Length: 363
Image (cartoon, rainbow, N blue to C red; front, side, top):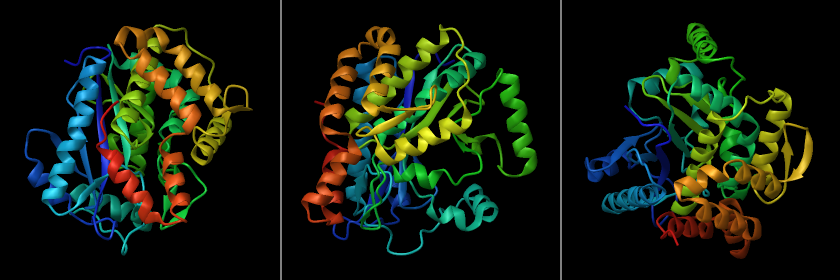
């Protein structure tokens, strides 16, 4: 059984041609070369690949596993003639309409969702935190709702697509918002409420099964964990570890905190959109009040809420230092945009930056 407050991370990546810098359908070849020493999975398109860490207890173990997974996949990608890229969308776009991985489930999704599925080959990061039971998972989901836009802003890493600056920090989240069941979860009264709503959604055939409920927080159907799915795939392993530790700290703190008042759903959606556009560099919307607030101030509040849990995990200095660096220099989206502008709007320079940062050391 999963122990409370453990953490595991799933990271999704794009596979690109090192010369053209465009996505290439190498997922099967990369998965074969990766072997069984890491948990590697194919994704919706053959241009994507995923690696999951084992269940981690300490911050040091998490950092080691996140970076090791990236480097293992990068090595397998090179052996297959490709390169591993930690960008949530392809900066240079596709050479043609993306195909769907030959898998019965994905083909059923294609039949149900049709043309919408063609643009969904985007990459995120999913954080799984061990909890005592499903009721704790639901309490964490409710408590996290106001802070999901801030986590999205911190992770934003997809500003350039089809060779153009989209004007958004997380274009992935805009693309992902097309799903009929995605984005911020509703406020739930308990696990029974969650299960009843999911059962109703499956009955409508809008989703194939509970695994297709793509809310940004959801309890596991088979193990005592809560999954947080709001993040772009972060640019660096360090970015990924910081976000995962913030999520773990928030879940642990929320479990022992009094329930909070539900935030307005319309304001929460507006806060998502603002976070997707401006990332960690601009103004954010506080969905608790509906007011514009500097995104860095919202991140500081998030840090303060989980500070005791971060200290217990030995991650306080890592997270605090990283948030200070993001406040000064920006996150993944800002780095991509600088590479784009410094290269006179050449998206190839963005790809080169991302390829270098994907497997960089955690300093």
